Length: 123
Image (tube, rainbow, N blue to C red; front, side, top):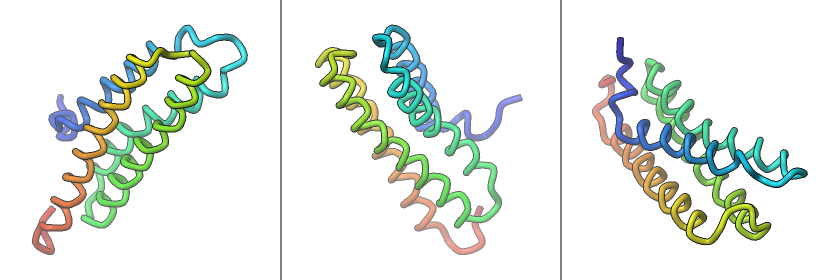
């Protein structure tokens, strides 16, 4: 069985991003567990909120969860920057991950705008 949200490109990209973050943080230096935890939680929150929003029945509820997902993407930005500054990830990895975040954030904005443009009563 496939859930509808699993077909969304933004969801697929968000899951890939969370997986990339898990891989990137596996070998963070000891003493940075707080950063590993926060970054992994924020990254996973993007896809989790897309999934939860898709399961809501009202347009307002879906929109709220998609906005939270976009906020989680924004939350990852300073966490990645600190990871770069602490030399936990290199500049190339930082730019790669940040680029993926930008793409996800734009897609989420499109999803939110699409909801706003739908006729009242449309799911």
